[in-house]
Image: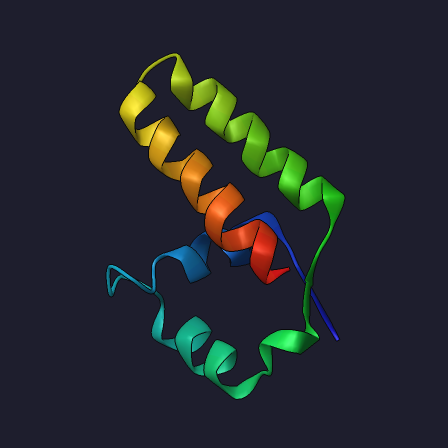
Length: 76
C-alpha cells in the first residue's frame, strides 16, 4: 500500500505531457494502481492550490479542477 503525497500526485500528472521524472515513471509502472491511495490532506492541498491559482490564471485553474474531479477522484 502506498499513500501518495501532493508532490507525488503532481509528478504523476506530468505523464501525459511526457515531463514526468524517469524514476517516478519507473516506480509508478511497477506498482499496481489499486495499491495507491490519497489522503484527504493531499486532496485539500490540491484544492487549495487550485483556489490560489484562480486569482492569477482562471483557465489553468479550470484545467486543474477538471483533472482533480474527472481523473483523480474517480481513480482513487
